[in-house]
Length: 166
Image (tube, rainbow, N blue to C red; front, side, top):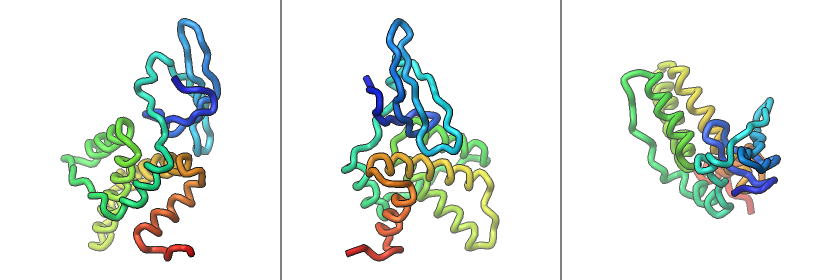
């Protein structure tokens, strides 16, 4: 059971903080999504807490950032963009932070490949990239106790785009 102040990952909303836990026959977590422009409190039944997962540990977050250059891009492609978007959204909801990071890397590569051929990437690709990026950066930021912008810098350093600080 989670306690007030704990951070967890909600399948639809991403990283949330537990604001209150009501007891009784219908025990409910009061969750507040983190990093949203207009967060709305969410009531989530304690009975369904198996659908929630804890935020990564600091060590796991550092490992994901360190492994980023070697994470494989995903090869899944569907008949159309909406089926592809549905597949990746389900993967983000049910998967781990590492899955979201892999999706970010996959869609960055796909968009870059299309742009290099002077083709406009589908809007769905941009949506998937944005959602996966927000989910993974907010979870890593909570785990590392920093901002999502700091997480982006850490990823860029791991790729060698920014020199290491001494």
